[in-house]
Image (cartoon, rainbow, N blue to C red; front, top):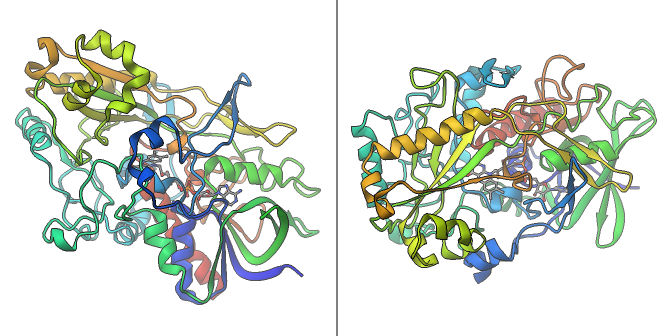
Length: 517
Ligand SMILES: Cc1cc2nc3c(=O)[nH]c(=O)nc-3n(C[C@H](O)[C@H](O)[C@H](O)COP(=O)(O)OP(=O)(O)OC[C@H]3O[C@@H](n4cnc5c(N)ncnc54)[C@H](O)[C@@H]3O)c2cc1C
């Protein structure tokens, strides 16, 4: 007989970790099935060549684009999932993101729950992840019921200067909400040493608030929680009615195992959750589990993002650069007819990251070596919302391989955001520092393999004809299956998705706890 649990959680990343953490105090027997293992703590964690050139922590998966071209997606199969590598910028969506929001290429649809209903879960998420930030600084943010548990991480001098310049020019920069365990008042007791190896790197000293550190490790000693690593869920099987998942099929140590539970929570990441559902087709669900509406895998989003490096004549010695954000053009207004998105800083770029960019760099900054380039770089991340198109979707071929069809939307808004950044920098004293006295920006659109912000393949909604999940994130067509990763997003907004996934997973976890009680 397969081993039986009260709840099986599939995936231990942002969503799965938060569900398990929320459910654990109920005393219910919880099994977490994680495809990966613990990410080793080793010097390579902080080695830019290992991480960015050798792709040491990226999965060996091959996915295919709409034309059948193979690519290696930037997915991370570890306890903690993508949060092991994430930048820990932990933003709330704006209240307007929960409503119908017109964009240049169409409508970003409303959510079945509003910001007000989400607000308490955001607060829980910010406290669970010990976020550093200052509510009240960003004029676009929604109401908040409780201040962040810790004050914002301070700016280093070069960023402080940009912050002051922006304010002087009439903008509204704010301290970006950061999930790093930095105690600036007592550095000797601080887990975080404030280093460069944060955004895009695993944290060697476990000082980044990731899902492993904040949600899974605290559960390891709990007698009612079992974590199985290297346990890849292959498919879910239903009983004869088709309404209940009654078997979870797992590949572990070269063997196939089966587990059962009263409730199953899928949180394998937006693409892999869709993959598992599509692979679970059976008599009652011929097009894939929970897919009577043909919505599973559709509406894939991952943001219309750009990394931008501005070169400044003055050296930028910043170590931890992610402290500044700007939402002045997040919404339509005086400066733009359309919502353009969010501007934030990213981790300081390193010489090894530019090797592939050498020709462009040479053009932009002749005479500059890689080291010089890095020393003068000021790094930004621009995020514009992309729309949930039904044809942007995950499908599987006959061999079960993932095909990802994606066409970007709101490119004009993304261009507008880039233009806005260059204008902002020109108006804030950066121009005079630019190399050669001109403005030089290195701009990189994020291609299809950059799936870090993947979302939307199993959206929630009130109508089973147009959504996979109901407003509680239970599959419309099943009585005991929930999805609690970024799949549920009906729209993605223009801020980083993890805090919203965590907040929703806590919400779903509380719902399941009440149901099982
Ligand atoms: C480099 C990078 C930087 C990022 N920076 C930020 C940031 O600064 N702020 C932010 O908000 N977001 C950021 N993100 C995105 C953020 O990490 C994700 O939005 C978030 O982790 C998604 O949560 P999830 O639960 O949907 O998936 P994940 O966190 O990826 O968790 C999915 C889990 O499921 C496991 N899994 C997959 N398939 C199976 C299977 N078949 N069986 C069992 N387990 C399975 C995976 O191994 C993984 O542990 C970043 C992502 C990347 C890659």
